[in-house]
Amino acid sequence: MRMPDPVSTIRNLGPASDASFTRAGIHDAQTLRDLGPDEAYRRLLTAGSSPHFIGYYALVMGLQGRPWNDCKGDEKIALRKRFDALKAQNTPTEWSDLEKALDEIGVLPRTRR
Image (tube, helix red, strand yellow):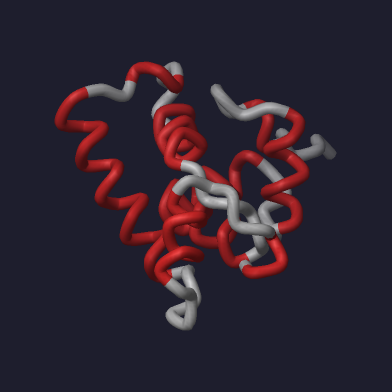
């Protein structure tokens, strides 16, 4: 019986991605493909990963078999809107304006996630 391919076999994702996705309950590349980028990223956020736009669009590009830096122009603008929506759905509403700003740049401590 063949072992499932790790998440890191997807373009743009490395060993650290294996650990992050495992914490989110995503243990292999096929499960990640089946979930798609938005649901998989939502699960990462729910599991406590810090939101980072580059990480999100690297995931989207990787699932398309494209290099992470291939995202440009209108496509990047559209992905930013999707990312912002995912992040907003997974950000506690009781955060102060300062906490929201710190979260926006990815420096809010994980204990607040």
